[in-house]
Image (cartoon, rainbow, N blue to C red; front, top):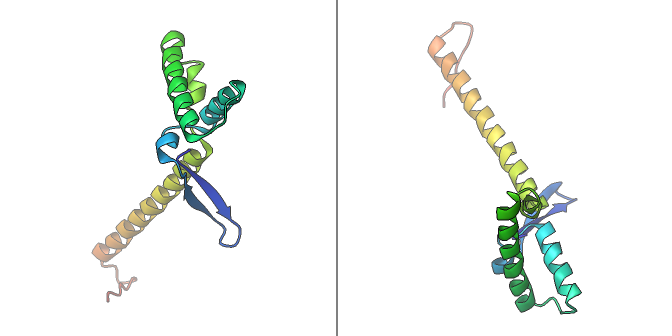
Length: 125
Protein backbone atom coordinates (compact mmCIF):
# COMPACT_ATOMS: atom_id res chain seq x y z
CA UNK A 1 0.00 0.00 0.00
CA UNK A 2 2.97 2.36 0.16
CA UNK A 3 2.71 2.60 -3.62
CA UNK A 4 0.56 1.48 -6.49
CA UNK A 5 1.34 0.83 -10.12
CA UNK A 6 -0.80 2.48 -12.77
CA UNK A 7 -0.73 1.14 -16.31
CA UNK A 8 0.08 3.76 -18.95
CA UNK A 9 -1.78 2.70 -22.11
CA UNK A 10 0.21 5.05 -24.33
CA UNK A 11 3.68 3.87 -23.27
CA UNK A 12 2.55 0.30 -22.46
CA UNK A 13 4.25 0.25 -19.08
CA UNK A 14 3.47 0.58 -15.38
CA UNK A 15 4.14 3.82 -13.52
CA UNK A 16 4.90 3.80 -9.80
CA UNK A 17 2.74 6.18 -7.77
CA UNK A 18 3.63 6.60 -4.07
CA UNK A 19 0.94 6.79 -1.39
CA UNK A 20 0.49 10.27 0.05
CA UNK A 21 0.54 8.89 3.62
CA UNK A 22 3.71 6.79 3.77
CA UNK A 23 3.64 6.45 7.54
CA UNK A 24 0.23 4.76 7.48
CA UNK A 25 0.76 2.66 4.37
CA UNK A 26 4.20 1.22 5.09
CA UNK A 27 4.01 -2.56 5.35
CA UNK A 28 0.24 -2.60 4.83
CA UNK A 29 -1.48 -4.84 2.29
CA UNK A 30 -4.66 -3.93 0.46
CA UNK A 31 -6.51 -6.64 2.35
CA UNK A 32 -5.34 -5.31 5.72
CA UNK A 33 -6.31 -1.77 4.72
CA UNK A 34 -9.79 -2.99 3.73
CA UNK A 35 -10.16 -4.71 7.12
CA UNK A 36 -9.13 -1.51 8.89
CA UNK A 37 -11.63 0.57 6.88
CA UNK A 38 -14.38 -1.95 7.61
CA UNK A 39 -13.73 -1.65 11.36
CA UNK A 40 -13.80 2.14 11.18
CA UNK A 41 -17.12 2.02 9.34
CA UNK A 42 -18.54 -0.46 11.86
CA UNK A 43 -17.67 2.01 14.61
CA UNK A 44 -19.53 4.72 12.66
CA UNK A 45 -16.35 6.79 12.53
CA UNK A 46 -14.89 8.85 9.72
CA UNK A 47 -11.79 7.49 8.02
CA UNK A 48 -9.41 10.38 8.66
CA UNK A 49 -5.65 10.00 9.17
CA UNK A 50 -5.90 9.79 12.96
CA UNK A 51 -8.65 7.16 12.86
CA UNK A 52 -6.71 5.15 10.28
CA UNK A 53 -3.49 5.26 12.31
CA UNK A 54 -5.25 4.21 15.52
CA UNK A 55 -7.21 1.45 13.79
CA UNK A 56 -4.04 0.19 12.07
CA UNK A 57 -2.21 -0.01 15.39
CA UNK A 58 -5.05 -2.04 16.97
CA UNK A 59 -5.35 -4.20 13.88
CA UNK A 60 -1.62 -5.01 13.78
CA UNK A 61 -1.68 -5.89 17.48
CA UNK A 62 -4.60 -8.25 16.85
CA UNK A 63 -2.82 -9.85 13.88
CA UNK A 64 0.32 -10.40 15.97
CA UNK A 65 -1.76 -11.93 18.76
CA UNK A 66 -3.66 -14.16 16.33
CA UNK A 67 -0.43 -15.31 14.69
CA UNK A 68 0.79 -16.51 18.07
CA UNK A 69 -2.47 -18.32 18.80
CA UNK A 70 -3.03 -19.94 15.41
CA UNK A 71 0.60 -20.43 14.44
CA UNK A 72 0.05 -18.00 11.61
CA UNK A 73 -2.55 -19.85 9.54
CA UNK A 74 -5.40 -17.32 9.58
CA UNK A 75 -3.25 -14.31 10.38
CA UNK A 76 -1.10 -14.97 7.33
CA UNK A 77 -4.03 -13.84 5.17
CA UNK A 78 -3.51 -10.33 6.54
CA UNK A 79 0.15 -10.25 5.60
CA UNK A 80 0.05 -11.52 2.01
CA UNK A 81 1.63 -9.51 -0.79
CA UNK A 82 -0.34 -6.61 -2.23
CA UNK A 83 -0.83 -6.26 -5.99
CA UNK A 84 1.80 -3.49 -6.04
CA UNK A 85 4.30 -5.75 -4.29
CA UNK A 86 3.56 -8.57 -6.74
CA UNK A 87 4.07 -6.26 -9.75
CA UNK A 88 7.29 -4.89 -8.26
CA UNK A 89 8.55 -8.43 -7.66
CA UNK A 90 7.71 -9.43 -11.26
CA UNK A 91 9.49 -6.34 -12.61
CA UNK A 92 12.59 -7.13 -10.53
CA UNK A 93 12.56 -10.73 -11.77
CA UNK A 94 12.32 -9.45 -15.36
CA UNK A 95 15.27 -7.09 -14.85
CA UNK A 96 17.26 -9.89 -13.19
CA UNK A 97 16.63 -12.13 -16.23
CA UNK A 98 17.77 -9.37 -18.60
CA UNK A 99 20.94 -8.81 -16.57
CA UNK A 100 21.64 -12.56 -16.52
CA UNK A 101 21.16 -12.74 -20.31
CA UNK A 102 23.58 -9.84 -20.78
CA UNK A 103 26.16 -11.55 -18.55
CA UNK A 104 25.83 -14.80 -20.51
CA UNK A 105 26.16 -12.94 -23.81
CA UNK A 106 29.31 -11.20 -22.57
CA UNK A 107 30.78 -14.54 -21.51
CA UNK A 108 30.07 -15.95 -24.96
CA UNK A 109 31.85 -13.04 -26.65
CA UNK A 110 34.82 -13.41 -24.31
CA UNK A 111 35.05 -17.10 -25.23
CA UNK A 112 35.01 -16.18 -28.92
CA UNK A 113 37.82 -13.70 -28.41
CA UNK A 114 39.91 -16.32 -26.62
CA UNK A 115 39.21 -19.01 -29.22
CA UNK A 116 40.85 -16.84 -31.89
CA UNK A 117 39.10 -18.96 -34.49
CA UNK A 118 39.95 -17.91 -38.07
CA UNK A 119 36.26 -18.23 -39.05
CA UNK A 120 35.37 -15.42 -36.64
CA UNK A 121 36.42 -11.83 -36.79
CA UNK A 122 36.08 -9.84 -33.54
CA UNK A 123 35.94 -6.12 -34.13
CA UNK A 124 36.87 -3.89 -31.20
CA UNK A 125 36.50 -0.16 -31.13
